[in-house]
Image (tube, rainbow, N blue to C red; front, side, top):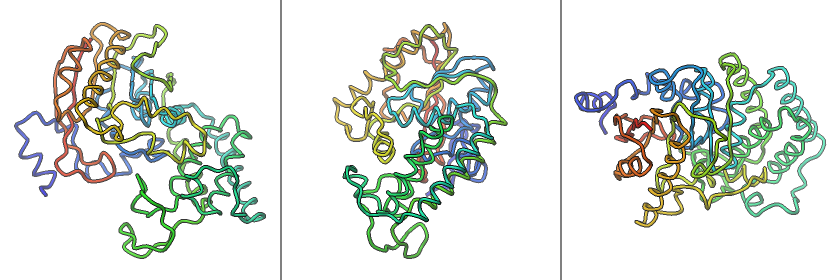
Length: 382
């Protein structure tokens, strides 16, 4: 496999944009996951530095930016640090929750008090009442993927949420992040595990024999402390701008007369990721509405010709709706793998004018190295 530098040298005379492509040493993980960007793992998100460059190149503080596929909130968070107002839309209830949590304005003292007190109450519960192993009414998913002690600790923590109204959503994300790690799955297979691990196994991540996870407390403690630190860091950086999040369908949402200066987004790629199944544990524990049937390009739909046709139609509707509510001459920045050549038609049908296409090499996108994987940066105007 060629190195990134060899890839860049070979493409030096093409449309590769070197400012949008980073080698690992140029953009290490701690920078890709700075402050609230790492409040919860999210498969397939683009790096915040990409959004930062788009904002610096094309927008001004005080502008209103739309992301109709808000995902984990990367565009919204970076807009708030840049000083732009933002609106995000996502069909996934968990994504909408995560976006709200990341962009919310917090009193760091309240956050630290609430999260530490909730953790202390969990510690006292765990010490006084060992797991019974019987939890009637639980879904088959929760019974299958969690050891009795782990599910007992997660359920107790869930009962605490309403006691902390100012921090409830933040506590919910701590709960979800901990639930992801506390499943009985291999340490190297957290994204889409196929079956639970109930016996010791050889762990490719740690190069040794590991045992299935039996508790949730250690994760709740670790992520509580990490969340407090990240929220404090973000509060020092964000500007006093608005961030509005809708759990809705971007194909038809009315934004109430707000006029966008532009759009920065990375739409779902057809047939790659099911964004609801990715966070199944959160939907189960938090009782979130599951609208996966409305998800555009979901992996479970496959890549049949009719599915691709539906994808083009649905993407056209999203961008046409955004164009209708954007300023004349507003700039749309779309990050996409257009290897199927779908976006010329999508832009035309949505009434957008193509300005430029640029290419970037992707070092990290889903958490695994992708080799020669490229994305296109499409710039279009209304």
